[in-house]
Length: 275
Image (cartoon, rainbow, N blue to C red; front, top):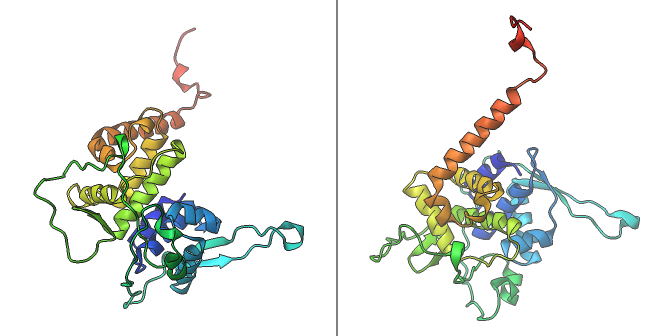
């Protein structure tokens, strides 16, 4: 994973929330050279959409000059094709007019299904619809800045909303990425309320002055730490424990740097000693 590419992907405007998630997923899988090879199904599973939607948005990203694709032929005389190789080109300047946002009407969510299971979504492959699901424990949707008086909502810029909780496309993309980190250590974790997660990320950005890259880096470190991995499982806990996490991470990094600088074969320390 390249955090540099992740930061660039989050800052690029692609004109569609689901397309942004696909781009974030590719950046999450890419190495520092911008190369990655996730399958259509892998991307679809993480972005909670259909394979046809993934293909459509990848084609759109290619048209925008943000990536190129190399088709790989599988073994056994071409049978069993391997996943494509993608090369991210995130330094390409976007045209001034950009890509227009999609304003097509989204059909109602079925009570017992996901938005990508509908025939409409498979045909259109445009707007993501993420169903808010009530969660418990660390996936709680309770915000540390939740006021009973409600939140003042803007007229635009909302990629997801549930009640007074909302977030932009970048906030939602960061929330999706964070839950991917949670799944890596807790595969059976329940799907969170993404509106609540995006809302907390937005609050960290607007009120605490944190950038998406900072949030993702610290969240990933916490998920990999032997102690914090079981305690930091959502943006709320990340925000609440931010200072403690940052202090411990910095101490850990400083300790690693000091250990790396030690040379146990160096005997200069013994000069002048009488033995």
